[in-house]
Length: 317
Length: 71
Image 1 (cartoon, rainbow over the protein chains, first blue to last red):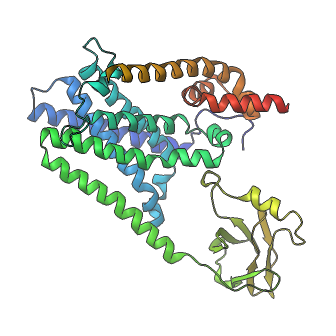
Image 2 (tube, one colour):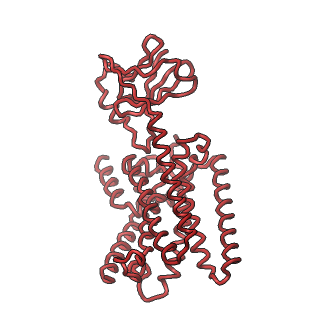
Image 3 (tube, each protein chain N blue to C red):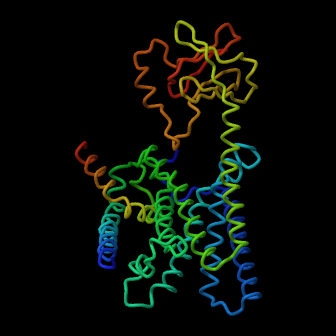
């Protein structure tokens, strides 16, 4: 860990990731503008920008939401996860361009404050078909702003994992708001059935992948139940863990990974820092434990654990 | 309705204005006060944390005050 925070953690892979991402974004914007100019030449450049950035940001949000479950289903998608943070911030910036152009185009030319106009230019709050859809987009953008603004490690360290994770889980609420924004705005007002179908496909993909990943995770969960008198839970045989690999088990709600490497076994908490891991709590509760580490390998055959774990429990083989 | 929305929007903008003023001071002094890894961080880093500090200034102000009292 570095002594000082770096503004952006770039390395060769992340730079490559960002180059590919920016290249695809540019390609999308060029193709979108070209198709619009070709088939609807009467549309103004501002409208093209509003539509291009809207569709791109929404598409990127779908991708961002799908990366997590895709990686849990198939490890070959892990490279997409590697720099998802930059993908998220870029998506927010594109959504911000969409919002800025929309507010200028639709709300900045009157004598009412443009932000006030977003909420008052259409007051059909009782109507479903005429509901002021821009309000949904406004609140979704606020959430995306908070997420982008707190994406640096500084915020994870200083807000704490619980607040940081809660804040970033709000992406699902933002997604729901944006679905309403798109559904009411573009689809109902302009009667664009292909858009409705695409939105349905997107929602089905996001929901389906999350469900599939959850089902797979549930199936793969190993929950050893037996408990010895001293509190140790037999987990598996040593030879069940491949060299330089790990086995994940859940004991008393604690997600634990047992690694085998260099002739040793180590047990660590298998939850990332940003997922609100519980090392601190575990450490304090085992302060008086006569067996710090709370993990052992009995008879060179069976691995047994006794959570909660210390930071890392080294087992002898 | 418009009067109410205007009031809420003005309060929101006032909150952000206070947040911006706080964020400038926080990026200069406060970030280093609550986190040693930010003391010698670059200006680009300080620029990056400005929007978050502007939005979450009450929380950060509380942390900063608590940290000052402890030290």
